[in-house]
Amino acid sequence: MRFIEEIVVEEFLPTVRSLLAAELRDRGLTQREVATLLGISQSAVSKYAHGDVRINETVAADDRVAEVIADLADGLADDELTPVQALVELEVLIRELEGGSDLLARMHEEAEPELANYPSFRVHDPENELRTSERVRSSLRRGLHLLENASGFAGLIPAVGSNLVACTPDASGIDDVAGVPGRIVDVKGQATIPADPEFGVSEHVASILLAARANGSDARAAANVRYDDAIQDALADAGHELAEFDESGDMEKNAGRAVAANPDATVLYQTGGEGIEPITYVLGPDPETVADSLRTLASSVHGP
Image (tube, rainbow, N blue to C red; front, side, top):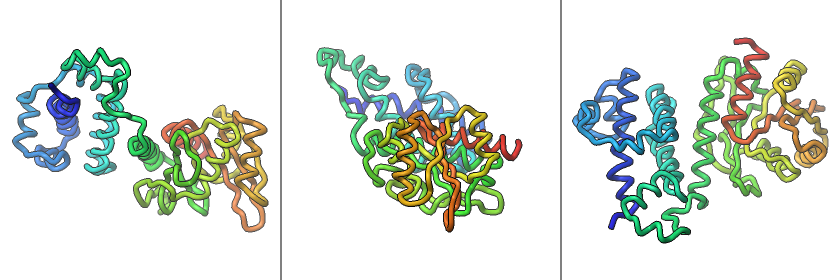
């Protein structure tokens, strides 16, 4: 009798560590550096490098595994990702692969064929609250990484700062929306992210996202940038649907009304007023999509 955790420990993790160690070595890291990042011994890294650890070809051939390994290697090698953040990313991947008939679940059924007699059997529920939250934060980190490295993005940050936020599928309040504590700021021409994303820390941008969703938008992520004619023109040229709302009174309600009148809107904006800075809000299905839109916008407005 084998539990799915045994599949993870005996088949999945050795393969992932071996692939990740190889990717890090390919990026020029020493065995000592790789060992430190992965929390293993140098001798273990040497075994991975010399093929002394058996790789599960089914795991190695999975596209999602390969994509996550490449992303983790880039982040760790460039000091854009801490070992703890990499661990969270792998935990999220494992939980996704355990669900339903996914990779690890299939491997478990191959090891324990009688499990196939239970069609509704799910070893782990990938939709529980903790795992859902971690997936949102993981996606948000990837989006923030794109923004942090986007040429010209700092020039889009308004005086009040920017934020990139993302919500859980059934979000009903601010605590269901993750964002950057303290907002993204421009420090000498560089977009600076002061802390790891958390839930419940972005009242304003989160409120705009929730108002849009409550009035028909399918958006799961949003970010705010400056408002000006060049920005609006570039967003329209990129295929975004723009909707203006009134900044006076209850701004969130006004934004919601604008979405109700145009549910396809992916850009909301207000042109400012006395004591109110004009702001543009870009909506999207996930943080990576929003970040990519802003990266394209920065290139269009400020040039490559």
